[in-house]
Image (cartoon, rainbow over all chains, first blue to last red; front, side, top):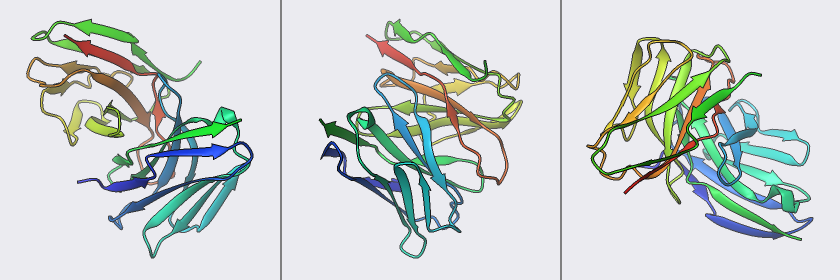
Length: 111
Length: 114
């Protein structure tokens, strides 16, 4: 059973466009929601994260929108660049410090 | 230079052989994790440890074993009982507790079993 559902599986965006990746969860005990960026052959690296008491967090071109009542959160990449081409994972952490990951979104930004 | 190291980067084994993947961290983190990554399936938790000499099974622990004798080390053994061991294995660590603590990942080990 997938604890965190992520969509779309792949995404192609023109340079300068907005990339949007969505995630949904069921477990209301999750208390921390990070997004990771992974390049081929590398380990994931934290991009941005949010706590459930906040509805939005912005860091540079990256924004997380969090809807607690709908149990959904999304990553928005503004002014997408070819260097943003990577796989993105959403995740959620439970109170036992265990992380659950989405299945990933492969983003391609076309120059 | 703080971080997580995994070795080797690539590992090849014959079917039926056990193999141990190394994971070391110098971040002074209490919690350590092992994930398996397969195309289209994201990261799946194999084992995790919140403290030395204690560890718990994740979602796909069958065919794997771990030990946590030292805070900085969390080796993973892929046994011959693991039916489909070829995958990319990622080790991670984090601070334990209820704060907004991120997981730090190692560079991964790609295991190929033929």
